[in-house]
Image (cartoon, rainbow, N blue to C red):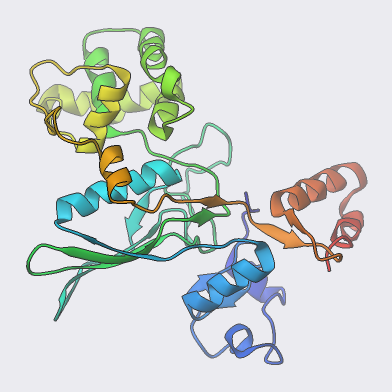
Length: 322
């Protein structure tokens, strides 16, 4: 949702506040870890960053503390969080072994300052990693203890970016199998849409499967199917992938189940344990009257103004802001 501009651009164009501002904003001697995706203000602490988002942009991220009995259950939670939030998490750094256990540090995959060289911004470009140039609010910091427990502090809420999900490996394996059997691309696309389209409005992975087109099928054939023709198609999968196939009614013949059918689904566990459902916020800006308007509305007005009147009239749009 945010125009793709780098932090360095704003630094060199005088967008960083001076020392006259609050110390958390203006102290240029301290390293910045958080950057607002709307006004590109930089912050030293997460607390200051979240306070700024809440006051200035009507974004109210919630931080939670959770404990899981095992690493497997924690991973299940992360996949559930990705499904509900529409964005992947990535490890920010390697595991850190500390006195109380092994550290876990994860962040939203869209957060950061490195773009994929393959990203074009078009609808066709829908897979990561495509970093936004600012900080998303979603993160997970945790510890894996010696007894197997995993305790975390996390925020599952996102803001300032669109949905961008990778095609699940289990769907790639289904596609590869059908390519090996000689099915045409049109038949494979029809098969995917027949099964996944009824669930596209309620499941982001089902929606992602419906976006597969001829170009992506060619890529899968070159990068995946040819390799699996030699090595064999993997039969293993994660619980969330199996649950996806269960939902759409696809059965993998001759493959043992990961989760017995009489055990609770991830969604049932989430409801029972009251896992915090992520919120995807729309970042806003204040007008001179003090009201909030969506930032995307302002950006769209700027784009239309540039097309209609040229760059000189940009100030007309800015006048609505305080």
